[in-house]
Length: 99
Image (cartoon, rainbow, N blue to C red; front, side, top):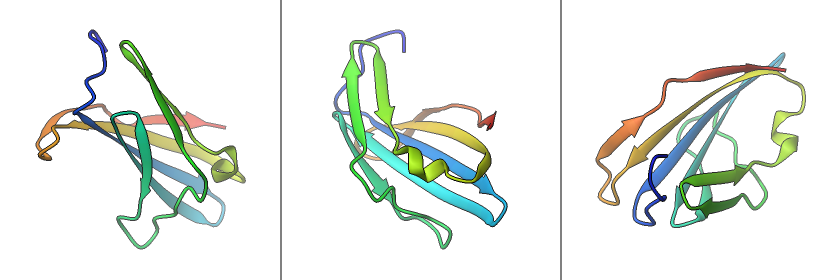
């Protein structure tokens, strides 16, 4: 970001992981440097492990467990930024990453 990461904003990471067996949905919510996995749909999967998130001035680093990507062909990833009340402030376009 252009400025330091505010501790009161919520960053919602939306991953769709494509494998030969189907699509896994992983949603991660980060607020104040604390990350949690969310179950939002039938095909949602929990990260199952601790997700580490840390802020360094204007950067937010989220470490997603590598085993979530086992047998993955590709993923798409998008991020929403929300106020602490839940109003959307910004969002990225989904990005496709091929393995």
